[in-house]
Image 1 (cartoon, rainbow, N blue to C red):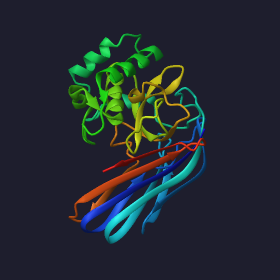
Image 2: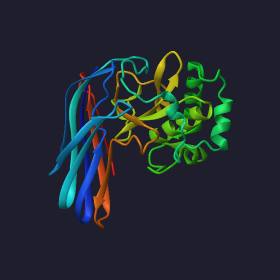
Image 3: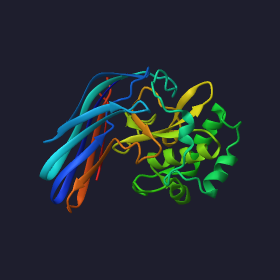
Length: 277
C-alpha cells in the first residue's frame, strides 16, 4: 500500500522564548513491512543537529531553533510503501535485548486492577494466544473515547475510567503484558483508517509484545487488530513519553500551545484528516 503523510505540528508561545531544542523520532522505521519512497522533515528557522540510530533501531535527529521565537512549525511530508506482515516486525535491526522492556514506568505501572485483568485473560504465558487475549481484554475494558484522557494519564487511570484513546490502550496492554512476564513496548506512528474508516487522533499508537520464536508482534487494541499495511511505524519506547515523535525544551517563561494536523492519503484517493487542539 502506498501511503502519503502530511503532518504539521505548530508550537506557539504567549511570549517569545529564548530558544527551543527538540529531539525528533519522525523517520519511518526500517524493516520488511515498509520502505520509504521519500521523506522530509522541516522546522521553521531550525538548525539541524546530529542524527543517529539508537539501540532500539529508531533514527533520532536533534534540532534547535534560536530565539527570540514565538512560533515553530514542524512539518513532516513523505511517502511510504507498506506491506501487511500480520503485525510481525520482520527485518528490523536493533541491539536492545527484549528483556529490557519488562521494566515498569510510572505510566505503565500495573496496579491490582490491571494485574487482575491480565490474569483473567486466559492463555499460556508468553504465547501468541496469550498476547491476543490480553489485547482483546484491553479493548473490552477501555472504550475508545477521544478527549476523556490527557497525555499524562496512566494505564491504571485509564482502566479505572473505562475510557481512553489509543495511547491509553497501548499503555494498558504494555502494563498487563509485563505483569505476565511478556516484554512489551509502546510504538508511535500513523494509521490511514480503521476497518470502518473511523477517524483517529493526530498520531496513532499501539504496542509490540515479544513472543518467543516469533519476535516483536504489534497489537492495536483500539482497532482490535495487529498492524497491517495501513500502518506506518515511526519508533518505540517504554511508554508514550519515551516514544514521543517530538520531545523538546523551550528556554523562557512563555506558555506553550501545540496544534497538530495530520493528513494521510492512499492510492484510492481516500483521505484521513484529523486535528488536535
